[in-house]
Image (tube, rainbow, N blue to C red):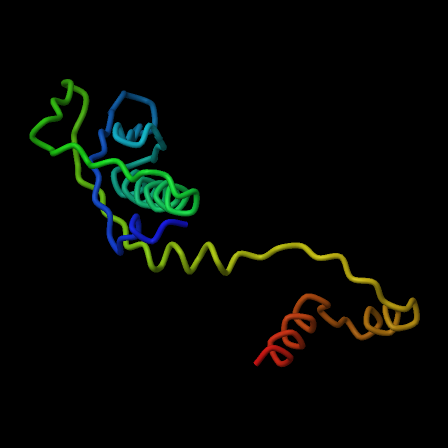
Length: 135
């Protein structure tokens, strides 16, 4: 990850397209990504989520972050609206770093049987043990 690409907040224009009987389409022309929502609120939530993930991916890959097109330079069609979508990246980065991963663990059969008998959550116990071990 290139540190010079990192910002705390990104703001990009999104084009919302309204078609009767369909979800609201949301496109980020500067990023070549799109999503949708069932109403304005859902479309904005989906847009922020997508913007965060797209920018996180660019940061992680060390790719060049494109400059956002100024709103005044985007001319919407009659069924479209242009909005500015922002995303706060520290929370996006934290969420991506806390995602769960699967690990295969080998146990003696008797220990596995006893733990299952006691309804022990293997993942929780392993997480607790690892946290204690590394702190």
